[in-house]
Length: 230
Image (tube, rainbow, N blue to C red; front, side, top):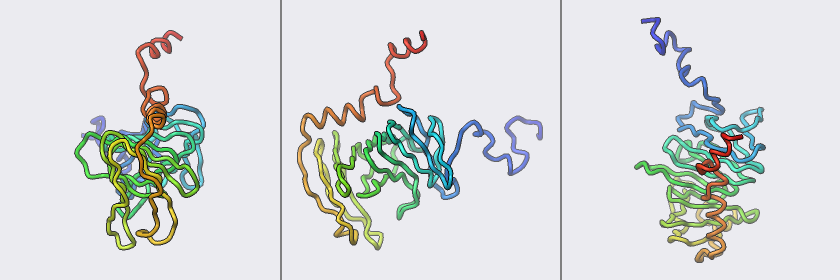
């Protein structure tokens, strides 16, 4: 039995089958790790404890490992196949929250929900939870965030100091909301400044930034052929 490849001989060998992955963060909090799927650019970094290093595709992220996109576009997938697309000047971290360890993101973020049937969600750091409908969230000022919905409604919600869920607003398909963070207690903290249809120019911009293939991991057959030829 001891000579069987893959058989653990001692507890110290647990996890050896994944030693080809670079794992960064705390993996002891019961979180579902994420994997860096794609990076467009070369200056994205990851910070954990007192160490900062270059972010690379294939890295496995545990809790408290902070991704800074800087000038790069970064795509991250969680264990449920939810996809987080982070444009430049954005951050991503698995953090312990009132609902356990979940993705917490900031900056310019686009979320593509998994097709799996799951009960999950993520939190935008300064303003609220979104469950899992496709949504884009962008910081537009120090205490202002813009939310953009796509073909399905998006409920934006929070939890008060007693852990009770409450809805801030619901975006119908192809709507935009400007949300202000005023500070203070949770149920009085946020104010909807604008709720409107998304203008055509904005639809084109968010699709171009977060959905079109040139910023992300998709490549056309022609592009792949050109790379191989070189």
